[in-house]
Length: 359
Length: 123
Image 1 (cartoon, rainbow over the protein chains, first blue to last red):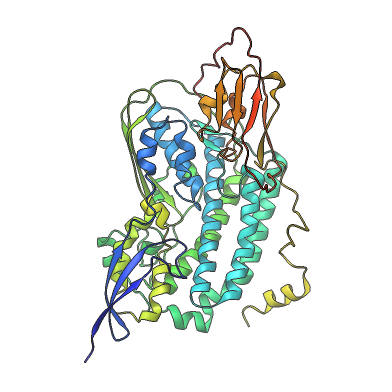
Image 2 (cartoon, rainbow over the protein chains, first blue to last red):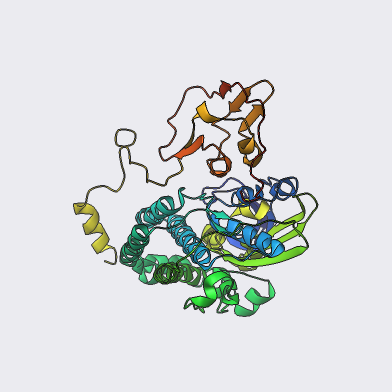
């Protein structure tokens, strides 16, 4: 006969870089239910943005997340550009693609390292972070900061890439690809990784769709759902196809992210090779008017911004739905039935970013 | 066996990490390290104070007081673009660690009449 016990998993746990609590109801070693507890790192960013000048909010928006900060600033700027009806120059759009895909590369490499660490493969963790460092160097050389770039602005970009740097970027991307290809095989073939991840935390295609999974979690369950397919920005002008795996387990989610790193490197090369000449910024004037929804693809999945213009350079309402928030219901579906020892890997497989989710 | 090439590379290549602070990586040319102020040309127009998203500037024109808190500054460069006299610049080198955090204070004689900053709303 088995007894039901409640085990608090988090908010402080070695596998979590950020605090979230999962109350796990276990019978012997099997998890039967998981109850999430959020609210440990709520910062009130949305309300802060409503009290702020809309131009200053760019810097606030990119501090929502410490990993995909560039995509946050792009999404916010895109919302304001729609409200002001500003046309962004094509060169700025391509530069935005380069930096957003670079943040995808470094986000996925960071996650792959943490994922390897979660099942005890520490040398792979260090190798992933070694490769990631090169992409951070590219961001620093091109944007001025390792993670927070502050280069995206309303109407375009604040920093241009000169011809030397464009060539250097193409070369560096090829080297990152070579380095990454050397270390990525274990994620597909290693016996111990397979033992810890294949068939663990399975999310079926139907569940992924009905529970509203986004990003690599959705694509690992066999659904080709990617916001980049909507063709925002310059994505309609580059060759892009989403990465899809059919397994639905932790191993598939790892494989999707490994292949997405290569896809993102490919997109960066395409954008740099097709980089149009011209201005990088349009000046703007006028008052904000109306409201706008904007969806963009972050490394973790689809992100939604809602901006409603207010009077006198402020916003009436600012709302962000981040991918981690959307991926918590699928996580609660994955956990029941798994072993307690597999919980860290399953939780990590959705790439939780709690500071984003709570803002 | 899948990691063999990486293992051999690691054995024969020099370390990826550096012995900081004994060995220091030179910053990239366009790195945003810290804000440097050259107050000789300042006309106290308060453009920097108005554009700063972090509230790092405090300017009292009547008293001729200019305060800058380098530890609130997020080095976004918005003030550099706004400054009509080009008094501000972003240096690529990072700020060194300090024992005590101090606000930088200048006392400037404000010009008799100051034009308001340029009207464009571009940050």
